[in-house]
Image (cartoon, rainbow, N blue to C red; front, side, top):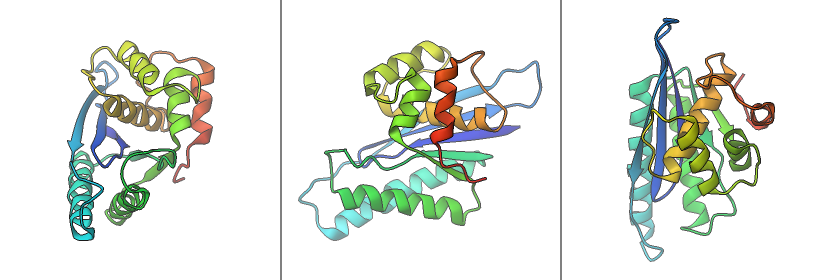
Length: 185
């Protein structure tokens, strides 16, 4: 059995997706999504912000460790995001990536535009366009939030890159998005 994990990291609602490929040709791959949520305020103290990052990071890394994936694809930081402290977003990303690498996981980093292109065929697709495409493409997975959709796309990118695509077919333009990912190999 092989698994792939996608991580759409966020200070408020991190999307996590897991794809499991049983390794038996007649049995289809299974996918699931979940979220890690957190609340905070721009007025929080440095200690409160640090504790929040550690709490979110531990939950994300714990999920990944339980899945023991062949590959983790994490969305690269979005520098255009207008929510939270930019240092906190970047700090959370490095905290999680450092822990994943220290735990022996293979980690790939995908820019938001690359994730959008794989999902919707264009790098400037909106979060809602990506959500709509993901719901249409993966009808067997219950997806209710943008972060879940993004995480599933990231996991699907990793599965395709390592020869386990979960889509029966995908337009060539979508597949070209894989060249924009920083793969670990």
